[in-house]
Image (cartoon, rainbow over all chains, first blue to last red; front, side, top):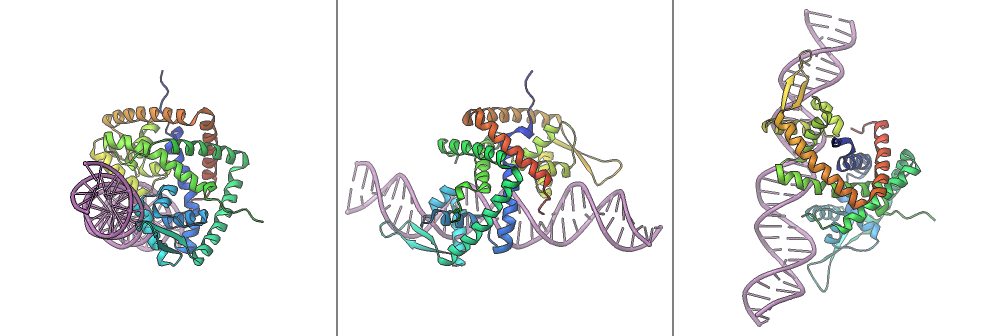
Length: 151
Length: 151
DNA sequence: AATCAATAGTTACGATTGCAACTAATATGC
DNA sequence: GCATATTAGTTGCAATCGTAACTATTGATT
């Protein structure tokens, strides 16, 4: 006899639920403190974490966000004066995006929140299970790099 | 000196990216074949998997979907005649939702797709890493049950 | 039993999203 | 060197989403 389908064991379902839970609790923090949207936080994080300037496409690839999402997030951060654009001298289609000092300051504050949250998660999950999760996620990331994009 | 924040190691970020990757590849299948939305698939799966009738609130709790999402998904499935509502005799606020034979048929077809996809994931990740991921997700699920809902 | 609180589910509406079409710039082929 | 294809990024628009307000029903309080 064939094994019955178990939704509770279905990986997309489990991953999605876990991701939503973990993300929501953190989003509540930066939304409350900075009125940042999620795409804005992800853009800020990509730029701040890289420590260099990036193009919008790079940000999108790195954080797997749609280019229109990135475009709007960049606009939002630009209005806050957290980010400045600089045209590429050789190829003017490119815009090099970099954090302003104010943006870097916000990034540092947010990474403090993020680090504290990561610690909180570690204590919630325990070191052993956290390691297991990390190992599993690494495998997914490996698969992502190998796989051909869907759209 | 303090450890620098590493976005690539930040759990919400990693989980979200992995979940999106895994979900998107499956969504492409049921969208192409049935024009099902994600909330509709999740509702169908919750009902089919439980094997019994459920209320909208139960579906929402179980799949962590907002009640308006559930409400619209139920409406969609009802229009396809995949689901029927039955009022509770004692408390008429409740609606007991159950799959029709057509709905059960669709559910079985979709679970075949899902099972095949799960197998594909297993072969992509490898058994060891899949086990690790599963163990890590179980820990998150445990934390979810303990934690107080944010909204 | 009359009022008030709580719960299940729906809906109106503003915000967010992604697709497709667009502009602008550069690369390629002939 | 000119037409065509390609790429970076933006925007219009329709679909989707979540919040808050709503209806309907039941429970609790007095």
